[in-house]
Image 1 (cartoon, rainbow, N blue to C red):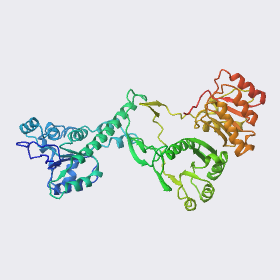
Image 2: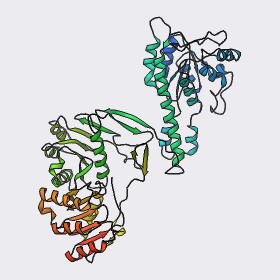
Image 3: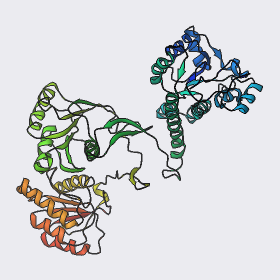
Image 4: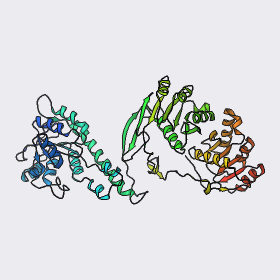
Length: 539
């Protein structure tokens, strides 16, 4: 491998094969100045000439680090409030020249081009600017970087002879490699290729954020959907041990599943933990009072509101203690020692709450494998993005099902109207039902689920499962319970089974050609039934 050439000018430059580039000249132009002074000082101490622009040049000058201005390098001034400062053919010839191509070297020599071997650039803070409340469009536009991405992409394209550096996290490792034993100041081809991959990912993320800002001003379902996701952590495995997995966060989203969430104890989070945690968090947000949701295999197996967190937990757990074994427990109130004492009597995989007192943490410590998560996020979950479902080679995109119907929007279909207490219970069951996999049936009483049937191909089977679950756990709860169904009943058999079990009120979308038979069965038993005219399938 031979030294990459970067003479003061390209005159008489020898042909250079791609190899270990000798860094003789570096251009520094960064928006995020974290670590840039130390990096520049390290480069200068190695005898590398520095070229810099605008604010970066000012930072180097303040630190007493010698450098050339971009104006001196290109022979062209920075103009238009800095909009034009690096967009110059001398710079891009110095970055893009293929240094084992005689014609490129001859053209560079004729134009008195000085080669640039390393570009250290990060971009205007577009994402941070867009995230600010009340930001003006003009400010957003001015934070669209043009010269920066162009320099990065030029150096990355020509990684055979140049190195793009886009992250302060890379500075120390680069300096260490340049400080080789013979003082040659080389960066290996493998390093430069790795930096090029990182650079193209960086500019792709940047352009994606810009495209998203423009697209969302015009169309929620644009002709081209472009999104970037940044890896937060690797996961031990996926749904099964033979599947690899990782957790990514969409670039630009203000909050996400684990934003400002601290793990206070337990094993690392798994793929299945995160799926279930997402389902539980989406459901618990339906309630403003103390509430508890227990999720197993992406379905709620217990949901309740209560006087406090402990009351809600006990009532949610009572719905299906067998299924709650190894579940995800999410509570929307801080937890105390009494709650912890109740929880450790059972086996849970994850506990999620907005806080824990010292007694709670001391008790929970007796379960070293329990993943204890504290929610410090004061902002609501970001749900403005559409709901995405990946299919083979494609993506299904839909609005999120965030509908929260009120009583006034519903119609009583039977002769008997629900009592006020039944109305309250029906609305509770309807909110829960929206988060159960279809076909979904929820039986509830006194603000707590007492039986849940989920994911069956036949709706009447879901009814039977919900009734069976209730009879196993707390059979007395069926008398006077209500039932919610996420879609209409095609036959009267499902409602009839619930009526026979003790259900006194039913809520469902309606719309079946056999609605009259279902209404007739309810009227015959004196059961109230409400039509919502809105379905809540969840696949």
